[in-house]
Length: 151
Ligand SMILES: [Zn+2]
Image (cartoon, rainbow, N blue to C red; front, side, top):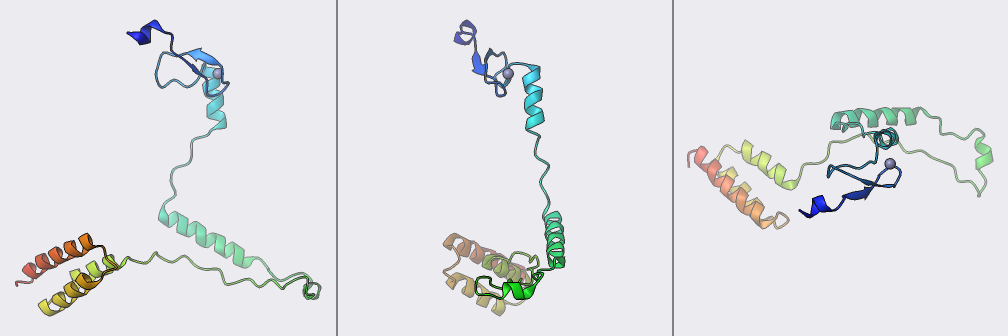
């Protein structure tokens, strides 16, 4: 076996020196280098959830809106050289809009008579902005719904 005939060598990720390694996943020449790397490259914190992000975002907006944007001496900024700074109302977080297809599907689950169902099915079938496989799937789901409604 070749890998036992030749010493397996690679370079340490911390000091760059060449060393012989025993495990394939090895990255460092010594414990000292492994620990030094760990100190300089702390693991990233866990992912922030959508709600946490929203809370953070709104907190930042609150902070920003509390800052006084007016220049200390307004007249000093009134020359042509300095345009007055006018701060816009900060935008609040809004829930991302549902896709068209998602809206169609929520309408499909609300439908309770065959005429409405037919109308909806035709609307989606003729909506070329929806990909064809999705329209076909919607048609099939519409038939399932028609069955459920007793048609
Ligand atoms: Zn090293």
